[in-house]
Structure formats: structure tokens, C-alpha cells
Amino acid sequence: MKKSFRLATLFNIPIEINYTWFIVLGLIIFTLARGYFPYTNPELDPASHWLMALIAALLLFASLLAHEFSHSLVAIHNNLPINGITLFIFGGVAHMEKEPSSPAVEFKMAIAGPLMSFFLSLLFFGLTQVFYILRFPSFVLSITNYLFMLNLVVGIFNLIPGFPLDGGRVLRATLWHFYKDIRKATAIASGFGKGFAFLLMGLGFLNLFTGALIAGIWFIFIGLFLREAAESSYRQVAIKKFLGKVTIASLITKDVISVPANTTLDQLIDNYFFKFRHHSFPVVEDDQILGLLTLHLVKEVDRSKWAKTTAREAMLPLNNSLVISEYAEAIEALPKMARNKVGRLLVIEGDKLVGILSQRDIMQLFEFKSEIEG
Image (cartoon, rainbow, N blue to C red; front, side):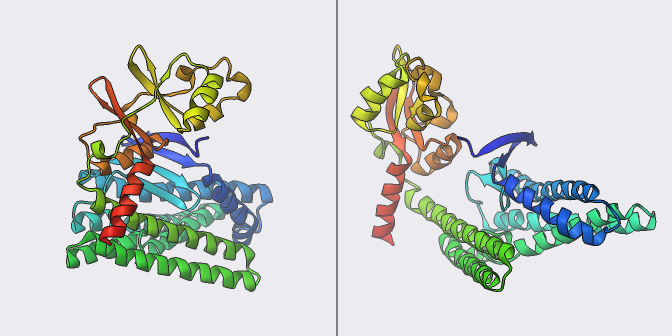
């Protein structure tokens, strides 16, 4: 089951919403409708408070989207491809195919987000003042004032020097410029990020003990997320260093077992998945590669339909995100695997299937080389 769905495409950048986004959307609406707006506008009825909360929450997430777009547009301007933007439970993230080429590019891309948030904060502050002078209804002022404060908080929070927050990226750019070593700079900035994450988790547990249950849970969740993000960001840089010159040809499994396109899913389970214990198989017809079928895709089909559903109907059709050349570098494979969401790539030269590559193949080599080289 997909965790995100496509909302729109702007500036050729796909925008997706992770289903966890609706959790925080609901919490923000509930908090505003039951707490903030009844306090600022007690003369209004509950239905009005809920409507105000919905409008404010949607404008807040539009602001977060603008924050991420500012990163993305600067990245694209500096020849850094952006695969998309995903809104999720803690805000949003822009998906880059590769790391910035220089400290200067890193700095410009990182600072763009907070600058956008500060600009939006100033914009909503100005609107609040103008609306006050023009004697707009008080509920309009409450919404714009809330957006002024929240964008200011988002800008300040993202400037905290802990990777992968924007401030952490600014710190990494500075250290990268000083040490001339992106791996060392990332390690230090990630250390600050993990330190800040543990601080947040500590504050979360403190809130739990003092009775602030909701605030405590949020601090802990955000801390856990930042800690994992800091570790994974450093791991990506380390992977790039250790795998930079390794070619796909040295990693692939060459004795590939393929399945005929007209094979039914119940036959596949018995004769392929159980027998060979692989998680995926290329699908072929008349020696032509049609796509890739994974165990996960089979499980998405109702079991009662397995006897009548063929591999062709259940497979992921062949596309660029499923294919890589054996002469490509291993580091190029990881973004493709992230895009196709199956963790596998078909290695094809011309019309011939040369082999298959899994994410596990790459990570095993990375773990071995990192253990040897330190």
C-alpha cells in the first residue's frame, strides 16, 4: 500500500501528501478550534471556530509547502534535480537526487527555506496591520496573526544548527568550506542534530512527568524523527564516499530467474516464490522484458483472485526507474530504488537482461567497506 498520494505538480515538481499529514492536520484544527480561536474570538460560535481553524491550518501547510519550494527552486537553479516534495506528519521534505556540489550551493539552498518563512511571517504581519486599519472582522485578524506567529516559529526552528534542519545544513556548509571534507562536515553537523534531538526527547519526558501529555508526546516524536534523519543523512554521505567508483556490474546477480507473463499468481507462489525464495522476478514474454513482479505486489491482489490474475496484470511495468546499466556507478542505483519503491533494479543492455540488483547487495558492500576503511 502506498504511503503517499500525488496532489499536484508545480514547476515540474510532483507534490505528494503522506497519509501521516492528516494526523497533524487534524491535531492543528482541533487545537485551534477548541483552544486558540475560542480565546481570541469568544464572541463567535463553535462552528465559526472550526471553520477558522480549517482555513488557518490549510494556509499553514501552504506556507510549509512554500518553504520547501524555496529549497527546491534554488536546488534546480544549481543543477540539483528534485524528484518531488512530500508533506508528512512533521512538515515537508524536498527529495534531492544528489548532494550539493559545493558549500556555497549548500548554503544558498539551506537558507532559502527560513528566508521564505520569515518573508511569509512579515507578509502576514503586514496583512494583520492593514486589515486592522481597514477594520476587517476580528476573525480575519486572528487567522493572519496566527500565520504570522507560526511562520516566524518555523523560520527560527529551522535555523537551529542541527543537521538535517536548515540551520544544520548552513552549519555543514560552513564546516565543509573550512575542512574541505563533506563527510567530516556532515558527521559534525549530524552530531549537533542528534544532540538537539535528545534535548527535545528529554523535554518531552519532562513534560510527561509534569502532566503536559500532548506536548510531551510531540517533543518525543519530533526528537525521534530528527535523530533518525540525522543518522540517515550522514549514512547517505558515507555511502557516496565508499561506493563512488563501484560499478553495477560488480554487484549484480547474473543467474536471473524470470517468469512468463501469462503465469497466474497462485502458480507463481508455488513454483517460484516458495521454490526459489526470491522476493522479485522479472516478467518476460517472447524473450522480451515486460516488467518486475514482487511478492508485495502479489499480496496486494485479493487471494481469491490469484488463480485468474496473471503476472502481466500484477507486475510493475518496465520504466526508467526500474532499469540501470551495468556500467553505471552503484551510487546511481539508490535514488532509482527509492523512486520505484521496490528496492530492485533490472540491469539491461540493449534488449538483454544482464542481471538484477537489490538494495541489499549495495548495503552489504557499503557495510563491509565502512568496516574496513573506517
